[in-house]
Picture (cartoon, rainbow, N blue to C red):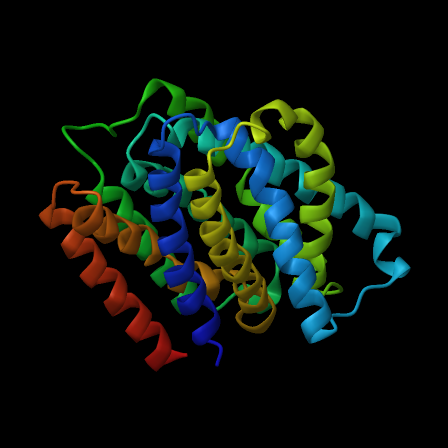
Length: 282
């Protein structure tokens, strides 16, 4: 069961990100429109799951440091989504996914330092190997291929985004993953609906249908990801989830006709080996 959570999350998120790129390629669908309608949809889908599974939620969760960390997590999600989808509109999906994964390097290191239960040095080493192999697979002619609008996302990812994982681990010691996702989506929706209201009104029907599907997948994926944090820890989750960018890449090759590159195929094989080794040694 522990392996099921991150693997299922990786597969669902891969399909979702592929649909994201398709959605943003539709005429008149902007990143502002995407963000404005996505979080209300995710809140609605999470609310349905909240009632189905009767997830716990109490006022005690909104006190003291838990409230401070909840606010910080919500702000981080808002900024990350704005800079990510703004960049995704003009850059290749496979390049975006690799950049977003770079934050796992400091995340794995800091998590293993701050939390005793994360100090399985075999898994830590394997997770770092998996991420470094991904970096290598996207290294071209002594540099990364980065669009101009992608630079803010790269800077944000490397500087601040890794701490979101640490904050999530602390929150999930008290929060149920479904409840946490519900509350975060609720507060983000309160900000995004008035902020992007003019864009929301203009969403074409075809774009709305794609948004419905991709946000159902994203909602379930992130809840499973949070459950994996609780059950298996941050480092193990990061290791398994490292297959997700390559799943997105292969989806781009088969469905979006991006060029097949041998380095990414090799990286996928190496990462699968690290996952197998982690399973055997764990």
